[in-house]
Length: 132
Image (cartoon, rainbow, N blue to C red):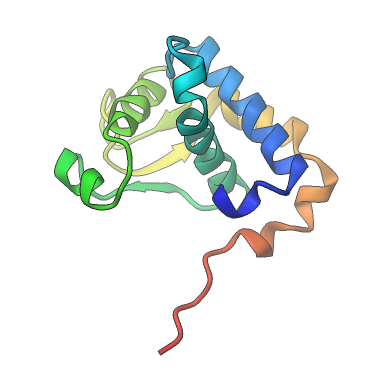
């Protein structure tokens, strides 16, 4: 998401996904001014997963792993809530574990509203290869 800040279509789509997440009570509406960017990063992760046609992989539920990677530990709760709201599917019914696939309203919305500009930018969203 950080490298997509100049991509207006991507940010707009992430904002729209964020509104869906808030309407489904996956992400709280409290303290919007303080947490908006954190919430937008979460929505951007979902948009990126859709555009690259990848799953979101939850490799660990341990909060210290998230802290070591400088990722908010609230993401665990957000992912669990998205699974419960059936926006993501998981191997476990009410917990985000392993591969998480986009489903339900979220997937339908992304398929219907994906701007044409983003369709050509999918390659740019892929993680760069490491060079030795």
